[in-house]
Image 1 (cartoon, rainbow over the protein chains, first blue to last red):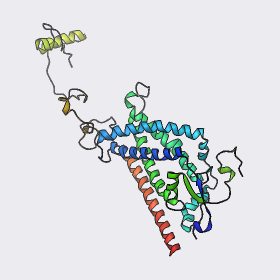
Image 2: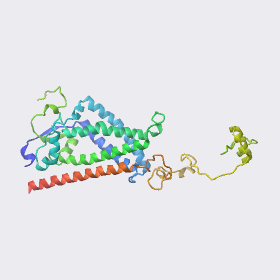
Image 3: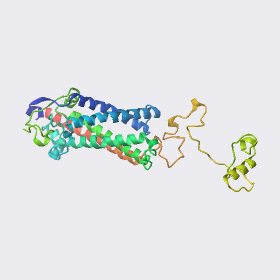
Image 4: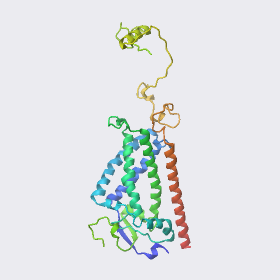
Length: 223
Length: 123
């Protein structure tokens, strides 16, 4: 049996215009940063060391500025509540991706406008947006400002350590990207998630109302 | 180790005025308040030039990757300083690629599983 046979599908507006713009802008920035970053680390020669470093620095600083707008957006719209971690139904979601998905079972926590992340996504995206990406920006900014360390009273920092943390962060982001790109195909159809991130609308299974714990705003009626 | 008096006006004891090491050294040691036996000799030393200066002509100045490179770096012998592009981190690189390859393998396996279960249902 397929999910399509058992469930009625509904179209919901999941991602606002800014959200989609931010997603694709950040993807482009991260892609360029990965390519130029690994070149600067000496993995291969593509643009040449100087160009790779110049592009990496420019794009990295642009990312810092653009990220400030994302932080503003996530707090002013209340969307940060979508990232509050929960263990509720976490095991059900893990079980689904380990077994249920192969049997065509419906997703245990389908996307809703006010709860677009399942418990596993909440945890992953919170770690990413609140820890890994800011850590990468911080170590990258420090790396870039190496010549000012003494003037800023940061002479005790070790470039070797900062570079190692920055490199480890790069690998973590690349690993995330591999899984993330694959998970795009795991919607109710192969392209459902891609379509949603381009147009904003996603086809999801119609199901009972969102449970109270999932809802982003407690002010709204939970039923 | 002796302190030579190198630069000075014409007629002074400076080396570049009289071209005489003995007077230049006497004058230098005296100014530094150090004793001088009158005997001196030269030994061979190596000197590391700053790469931002003394490179001529301008169009033949060194490019970044003459030092910032894994192979044949001009600074290959200069240890104790982290040089981006020359120095990586073998442990992190090994762990990093292991994580990336594990992700790729996991994703491929999962995709294969989905493809098989789907074809079974349809077939």
